[in-house]
Length: 166
Image (cartoon, rainbow, N blue to C red; front, side, top):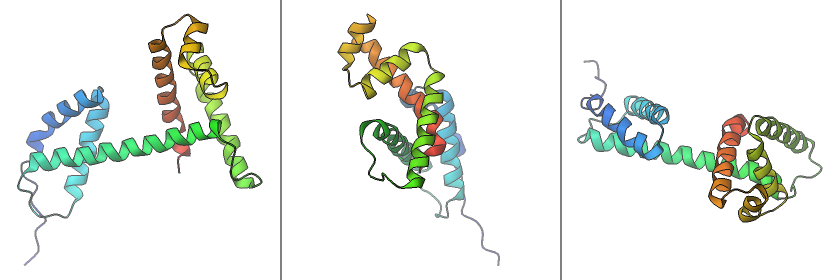
């Protein structure tokens, strides 16, 4: 007798609900659809026996994937910010030196793709150490707007530097 793969019934009927839930949480339907796709791939590739509560299993799997992605993004952001905030512990290491040069060039290219205010705010805050309020006063903007520009810049940098993450 040939062993049968585990049954995966009841999952696909929850697709739209999963996408809707994660669209609200992520505020981006494309990201929610990508997450749902990754969730279904993981569920369909799993070797677990039949799941009694497919809806709950899907949502928990999606949550786990989203948390993993958030942690990866957090590490990438830390890598970028560390390059600006701290002296290198690997001074004298040629490989690290080349990586630092590539990272700096990548950051420079990514920043060049952004509007002038995004670039100014990033440089003034991360390199010159100005507070958001000081930057807001310089540019005649609200502190909230400065924060929005910084968030936009950091997201853009994360997207562009994704390939450099370890």
